Image 1 (spheres, rainbow, N blue to C red):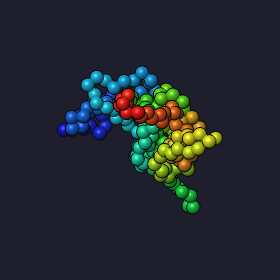
Image 2 (image 1 turned 180 degrees about the horizontal axis):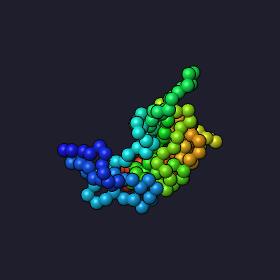
Image 3 (image 1 turned 135 degrees about the horizontal axis):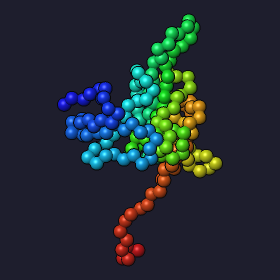
Image 4 (image 1 turned 30 degrees about the vertical axis):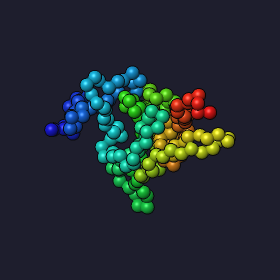
Amino acid sequence: MFIDAFPSTASTAIDLDGATMNDFTASTSCSSAITTGFNGWRMDLNAGRGEQTVTSSLIAGGLVYFSTNRPLATAVAACTNNLGEARGYAVNLLNASGAVGTDALCGGTRSGIFLGGGLPPSPVLGIVPIAGKPTTVMIGGIDRSGATSSPIGSQKILPVIAQKRTRTYWYRHGDK
């Protein structure tokens, strides 16, 4: 099996031990769909040379959240830091389209920049009471509004994840 690390075309099919995948390049298309016969998708990180994933991923509300870091190649003056560029991604789970800069599951960009650079923490979910009501929030993910983002900032998960549970059991008239 051979995988071309630098494919010559923008959209290339690859075979990873029988799991054929598609390289999605359209980051804003809401109507993108995985081509028939493909079992998934892959994407190139878009910040530039040297960018690498540095956190685990989190799937919430139909999106995949993860963070990257890219070393900066600029000269650093004495007594200054060069932590590199930290980016957060919010990518549609089903078609790899971007969701940063929109409240929808697609139609935005795939990533945004975290302030301060460095290695951001992995995104995590939690349930906290807001105005007495349990609310699902995420810490460590990119701000989906597209505004300036902190790697330790929190935000509500959109769309809201329904936590409805129902009990399923057999009821017989004689069980009373």
